[in-house]
Length: 421
Image (cartoon, rainbow, N blue to C red; front, top):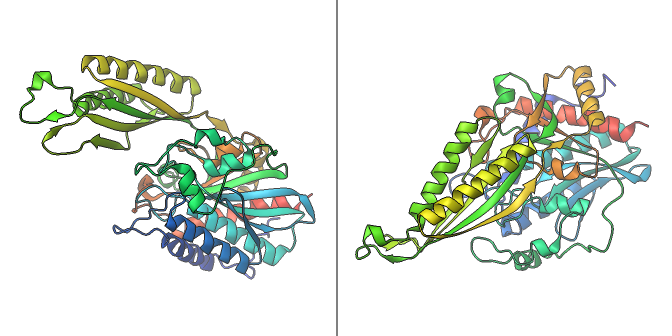
């Protein structure tokens, strides 16, 4: 086992690092925006083009490539026992103006790892499958983990049938126009999945700070996401006295200030973010009549998330009454903290030791598809460092050597899971 990924006759890791970065740049071209970032939202033209390009690449490498009903794309190398599958991969969608690494690194890494195993170790015992998941971010529609939830069978069509993006485009219309439809919910989810391993950039600065190349994730934080709608009264900016106004921006700003201040007082590991805001009518000489803003709350302890939600709700209702506005609170994501499978974590850690990889056991402060798979499938995660902890930003970057170290750990892990009895 120690020689599995050490032989430079089999794989030159400097060349691997170059191939990873070239593939990331290539894939990042689908959705490249005017500022140099990547905007590839679910069921957009850019998303469609990226999935099709990945399908072509998978087929070129000799994988059997296919889409499921909602647009998840898989590339498969069949095992001698086709009833069992070892799955790896990540999500193809991005945030608006994202970077080259979040999500798509896990897809590129998975293809290259399986390509290596297929070339040098032949047919596995269990199927090896790379999946480019349709959606994880919740960036276009108020719903996250659409791709992984459909694979494990927890997605419910009624949750998305009536939702729209910020441009008013219905979810179902966008899905249908990309050529996809709903999963048949009368059928059981896949029963062949024996393990899921996701590799991802850390999106934090722990590994970089501690000079580690690989993170072995033992748990993922829980999170809740909200859409808050504050409705006041739009009116003339010149003729409406300050004391008579029902200014939605003024009310919302007080809510946001208080919530962020509360989160700072409570301290780590709680984090809270207001990441998106819409003002209506958004005209310079009109008192704002409506504000819609989002709230993202995360913590390693479910009780702490629940307690913060209670404080959030009270604060918003109190401020709503104080400012004489109407407010609605929609909690559209509620994900519990999730432990990874201890046996797979142990396998990854042992492989890191055997192959002299500089690693660290850690938890994930970001949500990932791994937490959805972990509900029903033995699951684990690998991290590689993020320079300055930057992510969801065109400036996100990981050193090519660290990318290669991560793929090295993935190769060793997939080998043990798919090739050994």
